[in-house]
Structures are given as C-alpha cells and as structure tokens.
Image 1 (tube, rainbow, N blue to C red):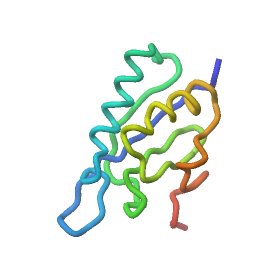
Image 2: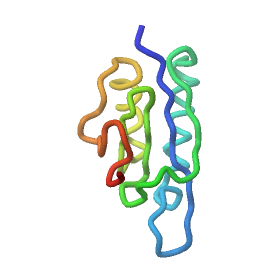
Image 3: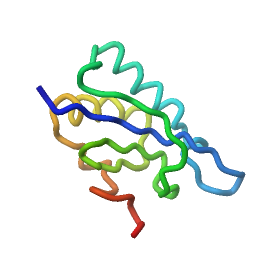
Image 4: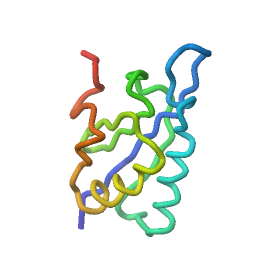
Length: 108
C-alpha cells in the first residue's frame, strides 16, 4: 500500500490585479480531489485540505502533496485524476506539473 498523502489546495483570493489561486479555479480542483476521495474510497490513502495562500501565487493554482513536499503549479481540474492515479495511488509524482520539490517554488 502506498504511503498516506495529504493534499493541500490553495483557495486564496486576492484583490483584482493580483495573481491568486482562487481566481484561477482552485475551487473546482478542490472539489475534484474531494470527489476522488469519495468515489475511489481513498480514505486510508489521502486527505484533502483547502488552504489559504501557499506563497507562490504566480504558479497557481497550487497543490502541495505531503509528506513528499511535491509542489504542483498551474493545476487544472482535468489534472486531478492524473495526480490521484499516479501520485496518490501509484506513488509516482506527475512530473509535467511539478514546479518544485521540497520547498515553495521561487522562495528561499
């Protein structure tokens, strides 16, 4: 069985003109992860949490998977199924969506 994963989805909305995950459809991404959790019965493999700002707004919508510390950026709702299947179930991060490993992209 794959290691338990905790998925964080940034839902932050910011004033007009500022990049924000919430304005780029992160609510749909969060719902898709919730749907996968329910329909695939992944309660023993993952948790999904909506968060405030994760920091790297320019890469949003942002999704972070722990304990792997894999930062996915520019995630679209249609990417969620691939993240769930490959990363959560099979343990292989989706390379094409990774913007950083271990720390927020563009920081530190």
